[in-house]
Image 1 (cartoon, helix red, strand yellow):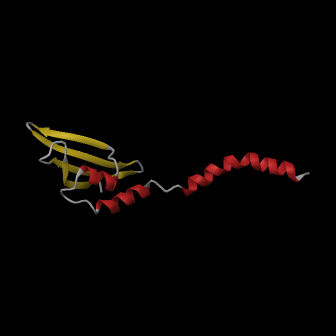
Image 2: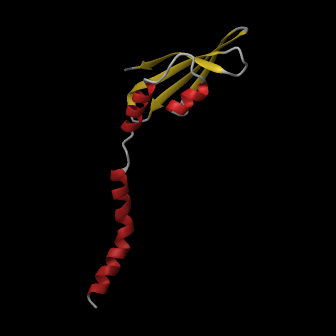
Image 3: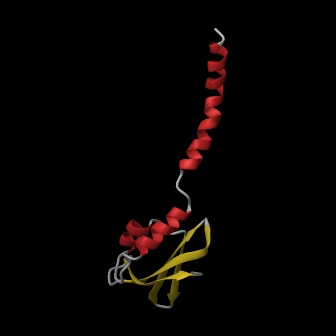
Length: 111
């Protein structure tokens, strides 16, 4: 009978101890940057915006720069919350088909 109160106490305390274990097993945010660095090796000129999104995911920021009558350039910026030291910028140019973009260049900033 004396074991019953101990088991009840453990059952009550168990939910508060689980999140700490879950936090320890989560991948660090640096893993996202490391994965992006590895995936960025696969970038190629002429890739479509869809291909880049499959490779790197959705960008954190986008910008469209127009110089008059031409469609201009589309820029995607990838940044990681855990890393203030690097971000990846991918630049696209419009293709012959409207609303389609292809990679022209990319670079790592603050690397």
